[in-house]
Every structure is written in structure tokens, then in C-alpha cells.
Image (cartoon, rainbow, N blue to C red):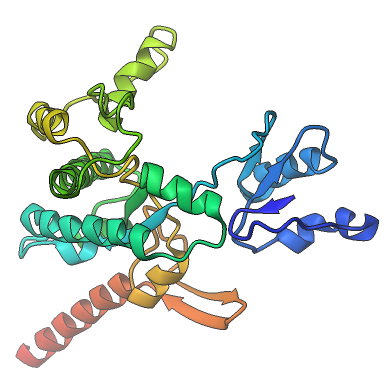
Amino acid sequence: MWSFQNPVKIIFGPDEFYNLDKIIAGRKYGLITYPNSPFNELAQKLQKSAGTPTLAINNVAPNPDYELLRRQTETLKNHLDKDNNLDKEKLQKTISTAIRMLDNVIDINYYAVPQAENSNFKHRPIGLGIMGFQDILQIKKIPYSSDEAVELADDSMETVSYFAIEASSDLAKERGSYSSYEGSLWSQGIFPIDSISILKEHRTEGFLDQNEEKKMDWDTLKEKVKKQGIRNSNVMAIAPTATIANITGVTQSIEPTYSNLFVKSNLSGEFTVINENLVNALKEIALKAIRKKNWS
């Protein structure tokens, strides 16, 4: 068994093996299993029950690349205009800066093993994501399970995707495309937003019913990438952001708020997390009640 974040082989004795699910619980790393490994069945069990990411490797190359991803998450809540709509101009500037910063990290980062360094310089993958999606819904008073929420998610993620790809392409014009660009889906004009139509071609008719409307000018962006290339093989990734969301005071990732008040426990201690949007709404109600009482 290997840790994704620590490429050191871990050997468990019989007692530790049977308690492996307890050992892994709460840890932020996944499992890589190999052919005929006694961990295969347990790894699959953990993946289903606890969401532990598992990668089964059947053909192991003599010198495999270690895939690493530099991630950064933007807070959507900080990109609203005075009418609480998404400020796309501000978001574009933020994303452009973020993509440049993430690409810089690849060059200045310390790599513990040469496989990781070689892979990162070859493909230059980065992952820009979002957090605070539930905050926007609460501010705009939109239920998470509503069609309006789906439309907002579709619009916001298309916008983030467009600006992230555009920023990486502009960076390629300045610094050059990643070395394995030729022959990639990018070079063939196939973007992530095209994945839905491609998926429909490989599924039975009626299997996939999804709105494929595009609000951004993707044809122009594809022409730009065709001309300039793209700096990074991967540009987007939705991270869990559990800890940094709590630190910055927003809802984590794209997930709904499951409680208005709870205590989070980890190795650093216990932290009380509250729904600040609810607190602000209650304060506003209280202020209105006080004003009404004073006026009467």
C-alpha cells in the first residue's frame, strides 16, 4: 500500500491489516493497490463506505510517473457585485492571477522524487477550483435543490472554466505550451465542455438528458488555443476545501450546508463552525424588529 502524498511503502502486520480501516479513517490520503494484493478487497470496501480514493494498478511500468496537482480555490462569495450577481470581470482578473501563480509553483516547488519532478515539468497540471457555492445560494435566497441553483452552478462553472483555459492559453503565448501538448485533446480542439456531447455518443439514446447551452464564446477560445497552445495539461479541479473554507469563513467546496452549528474535530483540535449567513439574516430581522418597535 502506498500513500498518495508520501511515496513510502508501508508494511502492516496481521493485526494492523484487520484494523486498517480504523487506521485510515480520517486520513487525507488514498490507496494504491497492486495485482493479487491482499489490500484490494479492503481498499474497495473503504472506497464505498468512507470515500477513500483507490487506484488499482494492473500494469506497473518500471519507472512510472508520479502525478501531482497544484491546487488553488477561489471564493465565489468574494466575487459578487452590489446586486449579488457574479462579477465576471473581477473573477476573470482573479483567475488570471491564480493560473499564473499555480504555474509558478511548478517551477519553484521542491520534489521529493525525480518521477514527480519529471511528470510535473512534462505535463504542468494545475487545478483551479471554487468554494463558497452554498454561500451564494444563501445570499441570493436560492434553495440548493432548486432548478435555479442548477442554473447558477452551470453558469458559474462555465465561467470559471472559460477564464481558466483562457488564462492558461495566454500564459502559453508568453512561456510556451507544456511539452506533451501535441496530440492532446487540447491540440485537437476538444475541451472539457465537449465531454457531455462525447459521452452522449457512447451511451444509449435517452441515457443522458442535460442542458448543453453555452453562454461563453467557446469557438473564439478554441481558435486562441489552436494558435497559442495552452500552458497546462489540466487547469481545473474541485477540491474538498474543508479546512481552508473554515479558516476563510465560507462554505466548503460546492457542497451544501448540512448544519447551521457543529463542532469539527481534527488533529489540531475542535472548532465550532456556524452558518454566518444565517447569523447575518437573523441580525437583520432583529434590527428590523427593533426599528419597528421604536417607531411604534
